[in-house]
Image 1 (cartoon, rainbow, N blue to C red):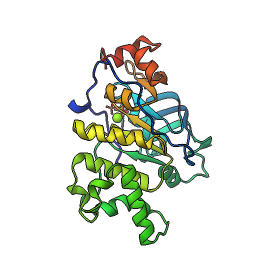
Image 2 (cartoon, helix red, strand yellow):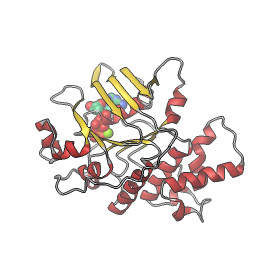
Image 3 (cartoon, rainbow, N blue to C red):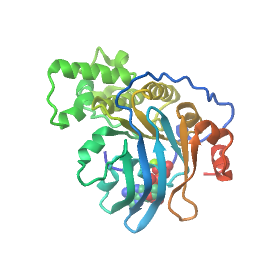
Image 4 (cartoon, protein in one colour):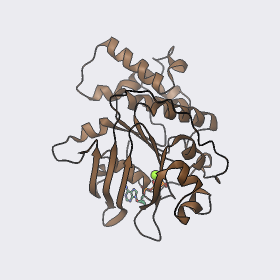
Length: 293
Ligand SMILES: Nc1ncnc2c1ncn2[C@@H]1O[C@H](COP(=O)(O)OP(=O)(O)OP(=O)(O)O)[C@@H](O)[C@H]1O
Ligand SMILES: [Mg+2]
């Protein structure tokens, strides 16, 4: 789970496309009364690697029970912002940040807060599926729980495994082979296994950094379905280079840009429909229609 060390190029399956007829009226399966839905807010977030400033005063509220998409050209700081949101940025030796990250109004960087709590409450799914390949599917799902001091009975673990895999949309495919190694699953299944692993510790926010960029279209579709289903239970922030995907899965969208050697900033944020169909800033229009980036 080491942080990325530099910008990545979009892959073919994750390339941007001109935005044309997209179904904006996605059906939400939101269920009422989810107790743990959280708002996560970045306030004046700046970030540096050594002396180099890569994010400049980002203000963004990611709303409870909604999917927020972060879009923008390679190197504009989307992954860095995600890592600031769950305190992974500080794992890079030269890295520093300024500003606040509030989870339901409480600063996760407050000195009295434990970093492990922040990372449990704010889970992360990475671009490349990273299950433990030799570990069983069952153990992969609860590997995060095993690292905590929380003691559970076998039947409690069984329930968590079933619930997490069900939420991740993988249960039916693996329920008869939970003892098989995680590495034996397809790429799309491995990514859903990683989502199940993140869900097993009951995060309040799920950060997803280009979760489909290594996947084929069918697996991508399956993960998008999973995202839409999860949106009622966990606040989701997804980075994607795929504009169709941003339009399909997100309610809110933030367009990041780092112009000519300057740190990344947010050009425009708001309802996904507006960002794609009627943005205020011409740079947003150019980006979402594939004219630059
Ligand atoms: N570990 C690191 N050490 C030094 N610089 C870094 C590190 N990680 C990222 N950077 C730099 O920070 C800037 C923002 O990078 P980041 O990976 O956040 O961009 P991104 O928007 O996620 O790009 P991509 O779309 O290619 O994933 C880039 O200029 C990058 O080179
Ligand atoms: Mg990135």
